[in-house]
Amino acid sequence: MLGLDEIIQTIRMIQDENLDIRTITMGISLCDCVDPDPDTLCRKIYDKITGQAGRLVEVGGQIEREYGIPIVNKRIAVTPLALVAGGQDPEIYLALGRTLDRAARDVGVNFIGGFSALVHKGFTQSDRALIEAIPAVLAGTERVCASVNVATTKAGINMDAVYLMGRVIKKTAARTADRDGIGCAKLVVFANAPEDNPFMAGAFHGVGEPECVLNVGVSGPGVVKNAVTRLPDADLGTLAEQVKKMAFKVTRMGELVGREAARRLGVPFGIVDLSLAPTPAVGDSVAEIIEAMGVEVCGAPGTTAALALLNDAVKKGGAMASSYVGGLSGAFIPVSEDAGMTRAVESGGLGLDKLEAMTAVCSVGIDMVVLPGDTIAETIAALIADEIAIGVINHKTTAVRLIPVPGKKEGDFVEFGGLLGRSPVMAVNRFGAAGFVRRGGRIPAPVSSLNN
Amino acid sequence: MTSSNRIIVTVLGRDRVGIIAGVAQVLAENQVNILDISQTILQEFLAMIMVADMRASKVDLSTLKELLAAKGRELNVRIDAQHEEAFLYMHRI
Image (cartoon, rainbow over all chains, first blue to last red; front, top):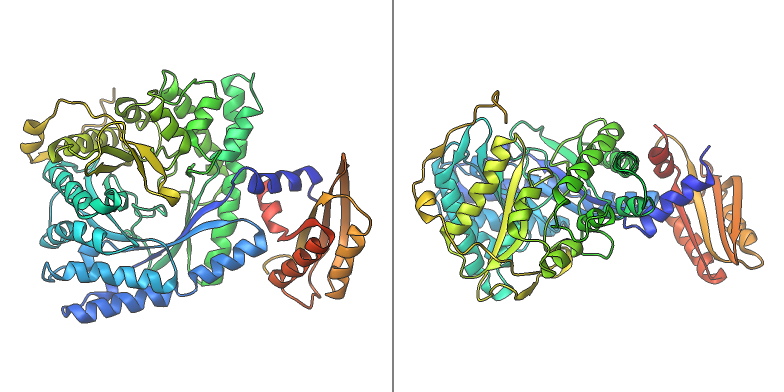
């Protein structure tokens, strides 16, 4: 029998501490849509997505009501389109992007991921055509998210792709200049991209995945922060133990919702992504957890250690709570989407260099970082290369989402609105690495037995 | 519903005469059986939790939630109903 205190705790977590299921994401294979005729290809893609995901939003709503837990987003991830569109003319890729957008709109989801290419070792013709089309697709659609995997630990880093992505990010910002370069918020550059990530903008349905699958991303920075705040004098071992317990409870909700949604939709349940995903809402911040641990401002000395403790404890608690863990699984530290991170940058406590160091011990990477509009493509590529190198050497996923906002300079403020949040324009080192980036080629895969 | 038909009804708000009667009336009208009631009063605030069985219910959980929410507005308290699994899953392995 449940205790009164347990029931009250669950209700408090949901009502006061922003506990929610961040996303249920349906992964759909488009491999059977391949067709030499572009119109038929688009029609098959549209029919496949709307056929599989037609009830996703409805079922999500039912579960929200019956279990009393908010499911913030219902989303779709598809097979990387560069794999599905091989052999098509380069002009077709924009039409494919629009097809994804229309299918997402008609089933009522706010984002669809999978306008993607995997180029960690090299480009196919289709990969090149897709990447060239990214700026136009992100400017001309509302719901489509793009991602490009430029490196893996096994293959090394495709520096031609890194440089190309620097230019693509600049073009995407220019194409959406009237909306502060918002197209770049829907574009992720990856190392070691996971095939089952439910979180946007980097979600796609990997080639090792089944026909259709349901993955879940949990949230809960507010729950963890309050747990930490309630232990002002506890030593760090005790704190880690408490974070584990809370992560367990948060993840159990994800497991329940994921299994129930998969059952009702008649598709296999994939994974729970054990991430702490912040939002701009008050109290829903990863930075604030670090500060509650005793670091004066997120970004001050001690931040990396505090984040390492947090990230590991979340994984330990979450892994126990779920039968299948996957995706990104770690604490996210996006700057504009986390009110505490934004505040830390504003106060001068957090800069790009510390942010990069933090990504070595947590999930994702240099995420939702707003740069001056005059940052050149080579510098953006060099920032990408650094972050990607951290992922490749440490056998982990890293990702980069940079937004060089046209016309803005260091210290200006940018408002994206909604879950994308707001951020000051961050300072970039005034020295560049154009000579390094322009060399191109491939950085070889690392040796992993000599691991210091 | 899946393994069980049990729900948790929670009532939060300022205490007054007739809250339990009001909630019980909605449940009875829809053939929902009350299994357990516990409540605490913190200062003048009431927190009441009922475990109920919907096996013979005339309505589904979504509809019951709406009926309870409407009764809550009448009584000036917040009434919610959730599937028991949401709590069991979080606190039990």
